[in-house]
Amino acid sequence: MDKGHTQGDADHGGVAGETDTHKLEVVLTPDCSHRRKSSLVMANEPGKPRLDRANDKTACFVHSLIAGEWVCPPNKKKDIRIAHDDLDDAIGFEDTAVDTDGVTVTDVDDWRPKQTQAVVESRQLTKKQLSDMAWNVRKLSKKLDSIKLKLSVQNVFLVTKAGDDSVIALTRKLTQWLLSKDRDTEYNVYVEKRLEAHPDFCAAQLSRDDPSAAKRLNFWDVKFVYENAHIFDFVITLGGDGTVLYTSWLFQHVIPPVISFSLGSLGFLTKFDFNDFQDTLGSAFKDGVAVSLRLRFECTIMRSNRRVEGSLTHSKKRDLVEELIGEEVEGTLTHKPEKVVQILNDVVLDRGPNPTMSSIELFGDDEHFTTLLADGVCIATPTGSTAYNLAAGGSLCHPDNPVILVTAICAHTLSFRPIILPDTIVLRMGVPYDARTSSWASFDGRERVELSPGDYVTVSASRYPFANVLPQDRRNNDWVHSISKTLNWNSRQKQKALKE
Image (cartoon, rainbow, N blue to C red; front, top):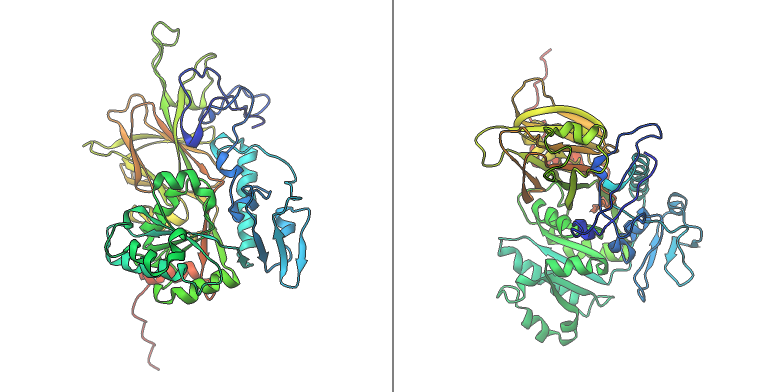
């Protein structure tokens, strides 16, 4: 693809007003008349890409590196020391100050990005831009795997497992430790608002015990996180893998490094023992952390536009395959985006409450892969390979693999086998116009929506990966350790030796 322009206002994945009349055209090749209709989006002004407002003011170091530039909120100073002297070569910083500990990156007034770039969602990227973005994220992830990030942490964000009151007392214990005068830094702690009046948390007592901490204890809700996601430096989760997924859902764009303490049922993403939280966090804040970038997907719900009565194409029977990869009739806009969601585990299209199986058209870039008759289909990230994908018969996949896993759920043919695709492909799965019933889509088990005939969902690699903090002592074999412990992978009684 060679070019792409956006029009309208799609703030936070929404859709612009009904007055927007401009369209986006992305040309696949100079001599190709096809359009990648998954990229029909809205923008601010005709011919002008929409800037990603969340990234303009991000304080997250990891995502500033991904963008290839240092971006920070006004009047916010950060000092980041990286115990590796080659990181600047990978990222492309022009000026770095080297001290005895390694590279020192400080956001001072003289810092300027090497080039200003318009940031758009992955769905709006050309094929080359999507490939370059995915490659750069993988390159950065490989660099981060061999270094330790030392961040200046000021604002700490806490996420507590929902539905388990026993974790609330532990949240209070952690909050009290963070707010203590014994800490070298006066941390600002953000706790979920539902705990403010909970008797096990007792926020009023915390303020009475330490009046200086009253101003540093804050409470958040979903709206607050959406509007102020850029202010958080570090995220701590207390719960299981579901709590980590909820954290990923809260931060739909940039997400700070996340350290997860295991207080739930599963432990694929929760790597740390809460009994050692003081030593773990003390070391993380003082010595730095090892970060792994987990691939996330950007999913866009695309709704079919109704045809105007009396139009030339109104009487023609609609075909989803023709509309998505065929030649487009000039002056028609077949679909419009409704919502954009970033996911960490999987997007699932299923039959929902319908008694009959779903009919699903599956596309990759500008190619029609197949028509699937099944209870549904699961599109999983490598992180989500051990979730629904595994239950549906899909492969286990190491999280460092840059791939997209496609697994049918109870397919009506024995020949439909799970398939693994590169993360540079834009997948689309939709409900054909002649389908007997609608289908339902869910994203990390949330945002469940009905897809009527003609609607579809796009899936592509997100430019906002999940920054997961790893244990220092087992960072290289962490994933194998997790599946062995959680799934009892290849666990069996040892075979007896032959007697001589």
